[in-house]
Length: 599
Image 1 (cartoon, helix red, strand yellow):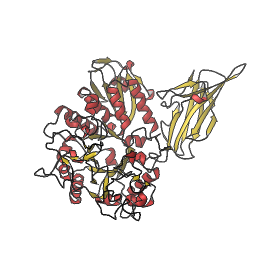
Image 2 (image 1 turned 180 degrees about the vertical axis):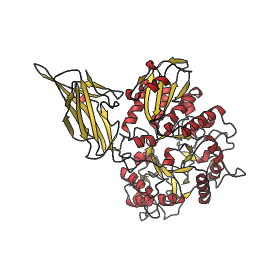
Image 3 (image 1 turned 90 degrees about the vertical axis):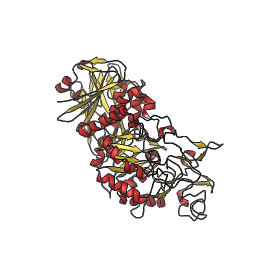
């Protein structure tokens, strides 16, 4: 009766997010005569605007709207008035639960609107980044590069493991707090020595968890942003690591933890480690005093998520901003001048948009650097602390850590998400993100904050999980040890030491195979994207003008045979004779994937 599909170019152009100032063309079809159709747009938390749609041919109504009043989120739907002999019946047409095709609503209050993201510019990341295969390293747990295996500069009152194969655990006191931080002794020399291993796997870039001086093993409790933790090594060793990586065509990004510091840091210094006059808790005259918010000085203060070990910093403080990203003598300037290749911002949602833009402005002086943010949800419509976040709309983040992909992959492979729903959810994300951001997102199956992927899905689903991460748009990032077959639940068991003497060859070979695909197949790096499905078989299409790459995934135990007619495409316009030929008479073994390329 009525029809609109935001994924169909016959009904909406351009697809997905649009640039500020560009025109969006909308068509709406109806089999009912004598109706009036209005195109309704509401700016995020703003005013409702309506546009009369023009009848351009029988059953087809059209409207074109220029989005020239600023970036942000806009929401749209349709008002349809049916004129009868006795009355005018008003109905509304909006987004369905799964997106794409819409549904009819009887009340405007109930309408679920479509989202359109309006961004300022195509924010392209450096070419090296878009081409990269990343490897995330938790430094303490990777490799000790000292010849005698001795641990550098052990911390007072810490716990050192007897064997590398020991399972990590927290040594806690009677209150449940950490009594002694535990260390295995991985260091920068160890990463340096394992560059050949990473190269053989196919890795081209490293994302390091924090390396600055801290009390804990994870080092998200920074004590000094300008000093490398001596347990990891020296500035000289870090410089050698960077130079060696660059000489081998590899890159490195650091973890920027700017929302909070450690309670024993030189900036807060609750323990007095830095002297009796240094730090905010020791003197209200301290240059760091205004960085923090005390409710009862000096012992009661605002902390990150209420964790007293992590005093929260006021990111609006101009002194702190200058310290982090000022043009002179700042944290970013020091490490950027070292030659690092970018930053991953911890808890980006906790950093004001203006703070992130300040970091990006600093990085613009280093045009080959990249800025990635930790965001766990769809970053296009994220609300944090009551504010809609604008960090992917230009001159801010290049991309985000793609936790939504990870969540979907796990649920699909473990039976919690059908191929139908997975395909639709992937298209919604593709529609919501500016294209450059979508392709810049850092895809991961696991991180130091999540359970290991093998623990979540089981060994039998590993092949499909790896294939999905590398088939979908974005930059793949392997969490250290996943390729070696490490398992582990929540922290700390997801942070085991790398099993150098017991690497699982099957898992390693799967990662190596897909990394090779990613590096050799241009469509896996830059190809257009669409999805389709049949029963519970998910299809991922990556394509360009000249060729196609199709990945088909079967999460079931059964061998499945399909013909082309069995598939449902979410964008019919991608279907051509070549694709019909490629997908004619398909057979997929259970718990596996099938790759099909155009000849």
